[in-house]
Image 1 (cartoon, rainbow, N blue to C red):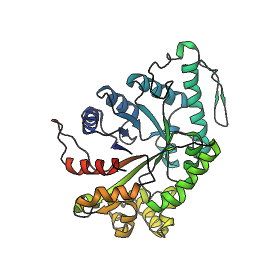
Image 2 (cartoon, rainbow, N blue to C red):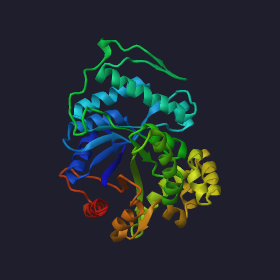
Image 3 (cartoon, rainbow, N blue to C red):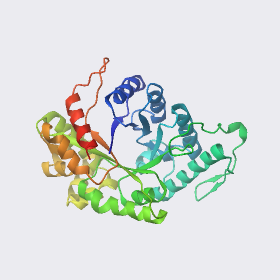
Image 4 (cartoon, rainbow, N blue to C red):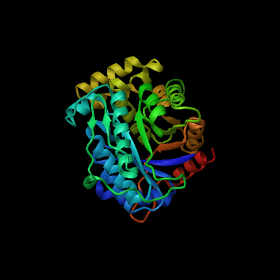
Length: 345
C-alpha cells in the first residue's frame, strides 16, 4: 500500500520545503489542493525540488478551465518531472463554479466525462499524432496546429509508453461510477465513512470497472482524518473540518447513510448565515468516530490500518506534517508509526 501526503494548498513560498520534506520522509506522493492557491503552479514548484516522489493535483477544478488548458499544464508537468506528475480533477459544487469561477454549471458527471475525453484527445494528438477531434454536448474541438503542439513526452516508464495517470474525485456514486469507467484512480473525499465507502462507493466503482471490461481496476485513493483522543486541540480541529464539509448539501448522502440528515440540514442553515462558530458543536462524538479514526495517539496507526485494509491502494492520513528548515518534523514518531502500519498491509 502506498502512503501519500495531502499537502493542502500551501503558498508558493512554502511548497519547496514541504515537498522536499515529504520526499525525505519517505512518502510515495504529494497531493496539492485548489483552495487558497493554484495547484498546477504548486506542482511545478514541488517537482523541481524533488527527484523520486510523485506529485498530483488533489484536486484541480475541471470546470474552472478548458480541457485543452488542463491537458497542456499536465503534459508540461509530466515532461518536467520525467513522468512523476498525476492529474487529479474534481467538479466542485455549483455555487463555486458559477460564483467563484464565473463558469456555467451543468450535470457534473456527464460533463466531466467530456472533459476527460478531451484532455486525453489532446494528449494523443501531441504524443502520437492522432487527429484532434472532440464533439460532445459542451465541446466542439478540432484545431491543433503544429505551432501550438508540444513535442512528445520522451521519458520511458517501466509500464511502456509515456502516459499521465488521471484520477477524479467525488463524494457520491455517480462520480465513483464514472471513475471506474474512464479514470485511472478515484480520490475519495475526506468526508466519508467506512460504511459509506463499502456500501455506496465501492459498488459504484465496481459497476464502472465492469463496464470497462475484465480485469479493470481503478486505484482507490483514500484520505482519512485522524483524531487523537488524547490531543483535544487536534481532535476539535478535525471536528470543525467535518462540520464544514457536512454543511454542503451535495455531501449529505454520507450523513443520511448514518441517520444524520437532520444534522446536515442544521449545518447548512448555519453556514448560509455565516454562523461558523456554532457548527462544530453539532458534530457529536459518534459522528466524529464514523468519519475520523479516533483513538489514543499510540493506537492510531493500527486503528487506521484496520479502517482502510482492503479498501485502498493509496492512503492519505490527514495529520499535520510541517517540516522545519532543518528537515525535522515535530510529530515524526507518529508519522513513522503510521507509515509502518500501512505499508505492513
